[in-house]
Structures are given as structure tokens and as C-alpha cells.
Image (tube, rainbow, N blue to C red; front, side, top):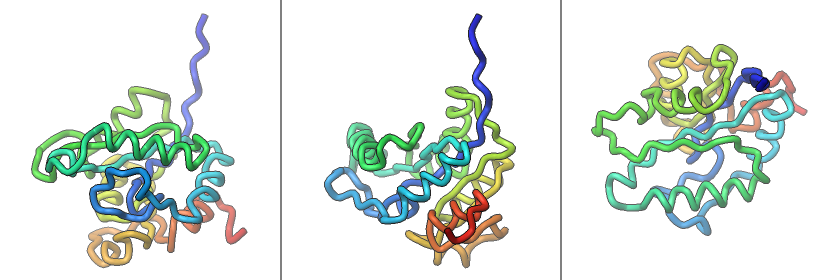
Length: 183
């Protein structure tokens, strides 16, 4: 008899501008710069039982600026840098006008994650620095947090609807989401 895994809430987190500094079409892992506060934020999420799942649009593949292998190399480097705290990575390689099911704010990457593991979607969050991240959360019926790193400050002014949390960075968002205050 197989044991069924219990569904856990997830933090669906954008990569560029949220976990790492935004480097347009990042193909070289040596150019990746993880924010100083990222590790502590992810530790807070893990301590509260969240799965941590990266969802990232990577239109540079469709534009011929990088390959899927480049993206996987960056994710391997990020995973190594963060001691394997990220449970899964999903990326959309299509362009903005590709009409695919996976490019945020569509839910394809989240649907794929739901197929791969039991996730308590009702208690999950989408965290990112762009309007499309927040719209993804709204589209999936999840709570949302906009971080002001990356494009966050500019996109805050473009939102049609406010997220549940607006935070200076992912660590502040993690503190608010987990109820840890300003520890």
C-alpha cells in the first residue's frame, strides 16, 4: 500500500528581480547575483512548511538569446547557491505573443506543478516583482505579494488590483506571509 503525500501550500516565486538581481536574458550562471536576503526568506518559508517553486517566463529562448540548457544551468547554480531549498523550477520558453498555456499570467506552470506534487493551492502564494506575477496569483485564486526589487516599484503603479502584501523585498514578504514580523 502506498502512502499518499499530504498537500502542502506553495510559494510560487518569480526568479529574476525577486530571488536574484534581474540580468536581461541571463544565460551565464557566473553572472547570477542572488540577493543577500533571499536565503533567509526561503528559510522562513521552509520553516512554515511551504514548498518553494520557481515559475519564470524566459522569452529569451524564443528570441534565440539563450537556450533551455542555459536556463537549466542557471537553475542548477541557483539551487547550489541556496543549498537545494527550491523544490522545483518551471519556465516558459515562449515569447510574449506565443499564445501558450504556460507564460505568466497564464497558469500552465502552476498546473504542471499541481500534476507533479500535491499542493494546497488555497493556501499558496505567488510572489514576484511584476504585474504579471500578481495577475498569475489572481488568476489562480491565490494570495499575492509584490516585492519592490527588480521591476516592483514601477509595476506597483501599473496594478489594476492591489496584492495582499507589498514588501521591499522577498525577506520582508516572507516575514509578513509567515507572521514572523521583523525578526
